[in-house]
Image (tube, rainbow, N blue to C red; front, side, top):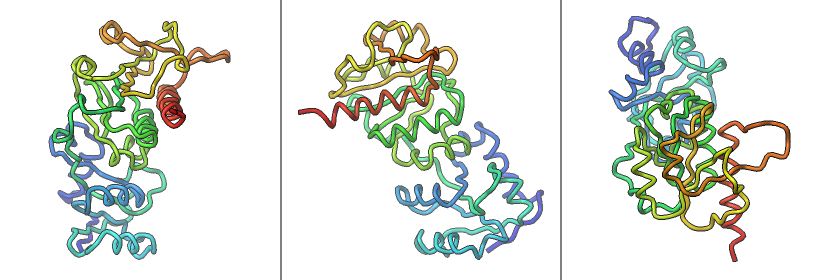
Amino acid sequence: MQLISSRAHPFFKQLVKLEKSTKQRKTTGITLLDGIHLIQAYHSEFGAPQNLIIKESSYQCTEIQQLLQQINKPSAIKVVIFSDALFTQLSPVKTPTGIMALIAIPEAATKRSIQQQDFCVLLETVQDPGNLGSILRSAAAAGVSDIYLSPGCTDAWSPKTLRAAMGAHFLLTIHQQSDLTEKIQQFHGSVIATSLHATKNLYQIPLTGPVAFVFGNEGNGLSDKLLQIIKQQIIIPMPGKTESLNIATAVAICLFERVRQTLNKP
C-alpha cells in the first residue's frame, strides 16, 4: 500500500479534479464514492472498484477492515492511504467515514431501449444535486427501471448526487444528455407530466400499465416544447396553502401512487 501525504502528488490532484469537475468525470468516465455504504452498493452490483482511498487514521477501523474482506481479494484492488490532512481536503463531507473508492461510471448505452420499458422517469433541467439524488432514491425504491436526463440537468455522478441517492444509482439505468422529445415519442405506454394548470389530478388516472412520468425544472417546471407533446397532464392535489411542492417530493408522490395502484390491481 502507498501512503500519500503531499498535495502535489499526481493521484491526489486527479481525485480533486474528479470531485470538483463534471467535465473531468465525463471525459474520464470515472467518479468518486465516499463512504462504506456507497462502496458496498456499488460492489454488490458491479464488483470491485478500481481503487480504494483510505484515511490514514481510519485504516484499522473495524468497519473498514470488514469492508476490505467483504469486497473479495482486497490485495487485487489498489489501496492507497492518504494522510488525514489530505483525505479531509478531498472528502466532500463534513464528517468523512474514512474511505472512498474510484469507480468506472456504469455504461447505459448497452441497456434496453425505452420501447421495452414499463416504468421510467424523464427529467428536464433538474439542477439541484440533492433533488436529483432524492429522485433517484425514490425511483429505485418504487421499481423504476430507467431515468432519462435532459441536457442541462445536474451531473448524476457528482459526489453530492451520489450521496443523496444512497446507492440508488446502481439499481437504475441512468441516461444523461437524453433527447426527451424523442423518448416521449418512442414510449409505448402512458406519458404523464405534472402541471399546475392541469385539470385532472393524480388520483383520477389509471397507472397500472406502462407509465413514463416527466418532471421539469425546480423553478420553471416543464418547457412549453414538452408540454405541447404530452397529452396527459396532472396536478397533485394540495388542500393546504402552499403553492407548490419540492420536485423530489412531487416525484415520490407520483411514483408511489403508481405502486399503490399496481399492488391493488385485481
